[in-house]
Amino acid sequence: MKQHINWRELGFTYMQTDSLVVAEYHDGAWGKPQLRTDTMMPLHIGASCLHYGQAAFEGLKAFTRRDNSIGIFRPVENARRMAVTARRLVMQAPPEALFLEAIRLLIVNNLDWVPPYGTGASLYVRPLLIGTTARVGVMPAADYVFAVLCMPVGPYYKNGFYPVKAYVQEKYDRAAPLGVGNVKASGNYAAGMMGDLEGKEKGFPICLYLDSATHTCIDEFGTSNFIGITTDNRYVTPDSTSVLPSITNTSLQRIAADFGMKVERRRITLKELPEFSEIGACGTAAVITPIHSITCRGAIHTFGKENEAGATLTKLFRQIQGIQYGEIDDRHGWMMGV
Image (cartoon, rainbow, N blue to C red; front, side):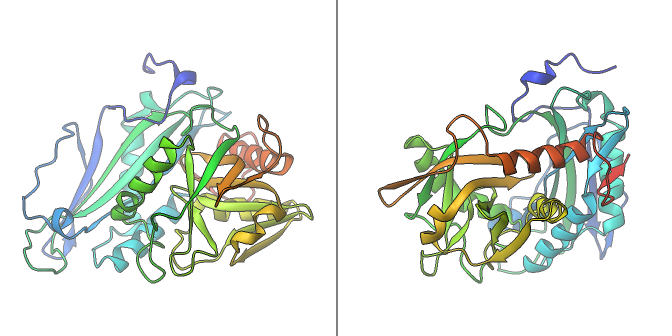
């Protein structure tokens, strides 16, 4: 029986569901994924995730589709991205088969928490990988825990697909050029919290970060990739060694190409901002957040209408959501059944 939840009023907040899934790595091998109901995890005080930042996570969503089936959006890509992150942080990644098995097991055992079709909500799935060996010297853990939790969610931003104001944050850098900005290390988000909070205090829901070497090129928003739409129908997104490869962004690039748009992954200088007709922040949580204005060095650059997303971003948003909810043919085979 579905939970008694006002699905249409959900925000993007933690909510306890029936169970989570945990698999452990010891003595050079992964154990089977196990269902657990206890959300508290015993952890040694010397665990490497606490002292040396061996912690990584992913984010993906499952949807009740128009035919009432449940589909997970591109989970194989999340498994592969976690493996890339694990290599960079010298961690032991769960094999792809284990990653997918754990997600399926979790969703099957939390079906009552998957929002119904037509509510605009989805089930957010959060895989987590941490090093658990006690270490006082800087070295990789020998033991790891892979845990997956889930919760029903609504829009990441209060008003959903609605334009917001952004602020170029230059007081803090999000990631170094040859650091770990291109992987989903948990510490990246702690590094950006101060800048994002400062932006919110100024009245901006989202901050845009520049390349830390020169502060002349666009990297990404605090929690999302940057996409710009030009007046001549180009989809432009930064090519940077410190930007996380967004699965949502790569999917939108494919959709843009389907629409006949030219897709460019390249360096984007800050002075190019006025040349874009539409700008968006894209990622798993928000999908696309239209940006109405960007405040930078005393100047305010505006894009489209203050209370309405641009036509191209709207078309891209509806297309990807249509595929996720089973309203549009899954022509690229992105949805995995449960």
